[in-house]
Amino acid sequence: QKEVEQNSGPLSVPEGAIASLNCTYSDRVSQSFFWYRQYSGKSPELIMSIYSNGDKEDGRFTAQLNKASQYVSLLIRDSQPSDSATYLCAVNKGNNFNKFYFGSGTKLNVKP
Amino acid sequence: EPEVTQTPSHQVTQMGQEVILRCVPISNHLYFYWYRQILGQKVEFLVSFYNNEISEKSEIFDDQFSVERPDGSNFTLKIRSTKLEDSAMYFCASRPDRSSPLHFGNGTRLTVT
Image (tube, rainbow over all chains, first blue to last red; front, side, top):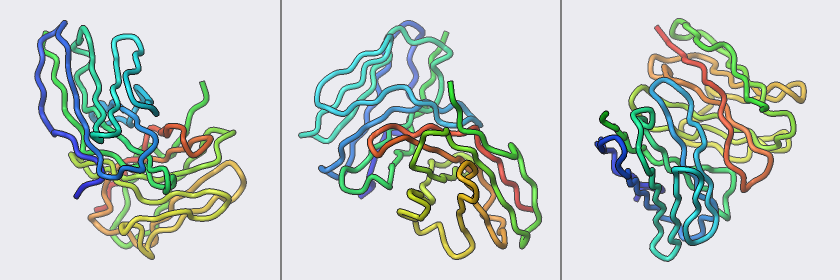
């Protein structure tokens, strides 16, 4: 079983729509959860961190965490063509902070 | 805003040669990482480094790889005898504490011919 699983996509949404990206993780002791955006050929760029159950909003982005169900999601409101990228879910275990696991990423296409 | 700096941005080398990839983490960060990403594939963990020693390493990080923090600012990844399959983007990352997110450098694209 993979540590972090994401649907590879591509996920296509029209400009202005809400994009919903999902991630599941395998280890219940995971403590810290992150969403990164990666443009082709570039390094991952942090979008959101979330540490406790519930929603966390930052501008057009909302991260949602449900530890009981072991999933994390990212909502992007009013999607823009510039949001087109691969979105990486990352998980940091509580008992092994040395490893920071990435999912394989979901490719998002926002169509003008 | 402080950045993680990686040099060079692109390195071409012949199979069997040694390469050293260099990184300058953010100055107050204590935890350092190397990741690699083969074209079109996921970001893979190689090694973590804390308190001047390796904390964790993956199966990829075999005897051909080594890391060093020689002078308190630089953090290097050495590949002793490169193989074609080492061709990838190598990312250095750092963070100030164990629960913070990683901050990534721009990466070094390594091409082994």
